Image 1 (cartoon, rainbow over the protein chains, first blue to last red):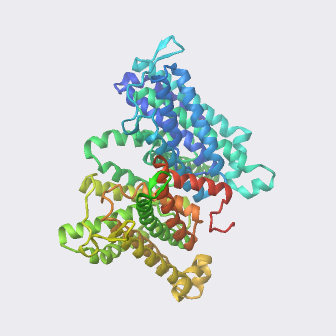
Image 2 (cartoon, rainbow over the protein chains, first blue to last red):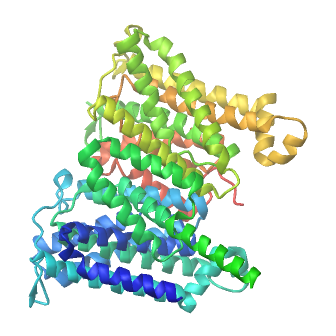
Image 3 (cartoon, each protein chain N blue to C red):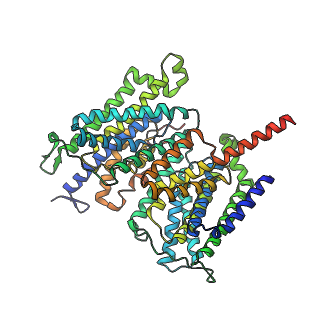
Length: 315
Length: 295
């Protein structure tokens, strides 16, 4: 427990001073957005064991809607974000209601197929700009007072939202609701026989996860000022899975670390090796699935647990 | 001239023909996917990549080694099937004990690798592959011209699907396969080499995808990404037909191709999404799929 608090204090301090360490703020914000996306995804994969293969749909749809509301409709920043999240929530409700009817591998395929539907809608709809996407999305100001145009101010805003989401996810997992989710993860038929309306819990988790993924997408649209089809594509859905798996699904910090590793790799490798990046990402996927299913944080936790057990045996 | 929905009849028939051609590819791909899933319990995400590799094998064979279409039809599935066997031995085999989603994730990674390698080597743009001399031109049916190559694609896929169905449902080998699908341990106890069966099944399923790729090469552009969106449509087809059902995969593949073609005539904007919409409706109405059984 004490080790955990130390880790959080160190990470929190690092996050606060990061823009002064010579790191590019826009890149840091991108990391935070994808970390938030991965945390939202982990709520499903890690804590409910539902593999959604189409989370880019909520991330991307929300990014598009926020971008469109802020740019074409002249909405304020906060209202634009809320609008985007509301759309992600509705999408999550509809797709989730269809997908939770099946489990495991079927669930994955259904979420993938319906996300592809969202992709094609984004490709063909008028407000998304088709192949070009949306560009020049203004960041606006917070409640009309604090201008977010400055990268450092925007960074602290994104960091605050990220911290809030992170704490919220911890609260959700540790709440009675989260305990039921864990029970479903451990043994679904048992949870059913105990009288829980399992489908309703799963749908609720799905909607929460989709909404938070949408929030991450909205913020990403504002941070970078553009939205493209790749935000809503299957590749993005795959990458968020990799982030979560690599960092450690079912741990709180894992997705954050996974997102940092994957986004950093992409940022630096794409200049170096061009289209070989996807080969490298694919290879990491293969290695991760074959020998590293617990992920970074999962492995560290296992080591600690082992050591604690050894200490207990000796003492 | 006869019109339906304000569209001239030959145009509709032309689109239906195209739809049936697409449907043939869906049927071949979803058949392989269903066979692999039935025995291995793995949803093969790399199926689209193997389809792409099949088309590229034909393209490279012709461009670099002068291997003609007919030989490609035989050699490309063999080569890609062998690659599949290697992948099964090296990687997939280690995942049969863990949850099936890991098989999906592993094959997703393999698809990324295959697409990335081909894109790095050949660029993202499409390459064209000539229609073999024997199959050029078309029959004039009076009301429309039937391109011979497209007719050949439909005929070839339906035949291959039929033969595969026969092999699985009516032969001794097929009965072993089906038995191993039901209870691998028991079949192993009877002295049948189940790991070998599993390996060959994966190779055969992959070879079917590659065969679809060779058939597709003259009618679509051969490009590294030709399989990545197709595989998602094929997933939807398999969900609609009912996972693991051989006949369901074939029939729903062909029918959905037709429906897609029809949508292109009536409401072109929806032609990309119609399969997914149908999937959603089927799931609400019959969660196990049209030909699937409720567990």
